[in-house]
Length: 332
Image (cartoon, rainbow, N blue to C red):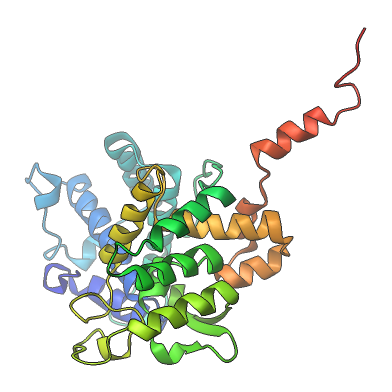
């Protein structure tokens, strides 16, 4: 939760601009606030403006805009070094903070900010660190079937709901935030499709297969229709409900998937909700011969380079390639 009263006015102005003009999602706004609050705390230390020794207790509300005008590229580099040396931040984490800082200073360097305007942009030549290339973790086809079997266990009083959730994750590769945000009127079972709101509040259509339609229909038969809360989460419109008859939350979904993983005999520390998104993408690419552009559209990736991590080949394919070498069985 963003505590605006703890922010300087120029930071809140940037957050408002990001919400209304850049149309950033609430999650993005939270990340911006977190990243910039951390950066401004560091600036207070670097400019000797705080005697507080505990980083988390440094206040930024009183940091004047005149200090922001003094920030140079070297100060930003020093912040990134601080993240690396003190927090052992990975390249991906630093890259996200660099992106936030770039957007922040771009805002302050253009007419959009009006009241808060810099005469130069210190982040203009800020480079993004090279990210470590890691293959995504995902469930195999057999492991995915085991997880679905665990989700359908009738000992779980919410098995219809949880099976529908797991089925959508494994078949459609949607994000957690997208799933909990689905409303009933977003689903069109006649056309076998539904709409979700992805990153940047961008709406996209996800087409459903037979398993998804069946799972949703089974859940709708038991979904509560009375006593649903009317709240600021629009629970009365939500597809998936909690036992308290409110829109299901991230933690409830994460706990359900965690429990299913354990019941399926899978490593719940290795796999998570987001790994199910990786699983769906990998299975579609490896088994469905899906075009990479179609996969990009389905997953809601802005850049094709993000989707290309799923074009990796499995260890089994590498082993098979070696075994098919014509020299493999040559005896001398």
